[in-house]
Length: 184
Image 1 (cartoon, one colour):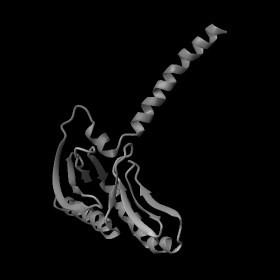
Image 2: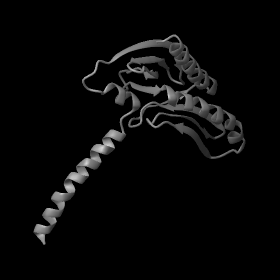
Image 3: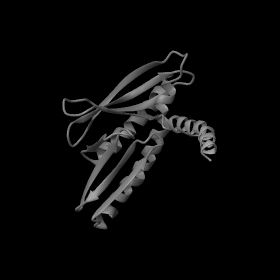
Image 4: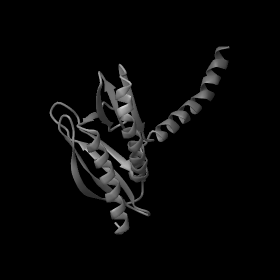
């Protein structure tokens, strides 16, 4: 019986290992997938945008163009490192940015009715495939907008207002479309 268990475990070990490798592959972001290609030159250009005001501090924002065939465009949101916390960065691929802007229209249209419902706590958010989140929560009648920059870390930042979120994401999409049209 003991021999049977050893043989069974030896047969299952490669399957478990393969499953873990597949999980690790699924967890890469679009940016990581693009930049982790071996045997190729990766060139990128950054275009700065206005900083995004937070309740505490601000985020550096911009567009990162990854040169390739075709080029890839990412909206970059970066929280700088300080002596008391690590920095965090979100790299949002263009097609996800388009979906976020659609979601922001829906989220912003629901805020007032969610506040009027007077919940003890309510959260309404949109999450991308890469784990970036944008949304708001309502507690004690007050709405708070937030962004979660990275999937696997405590990287939530609180934005001063809904308008700042909407304007930042809308401007980023417009800038990418401008860059694409110019052939960048």
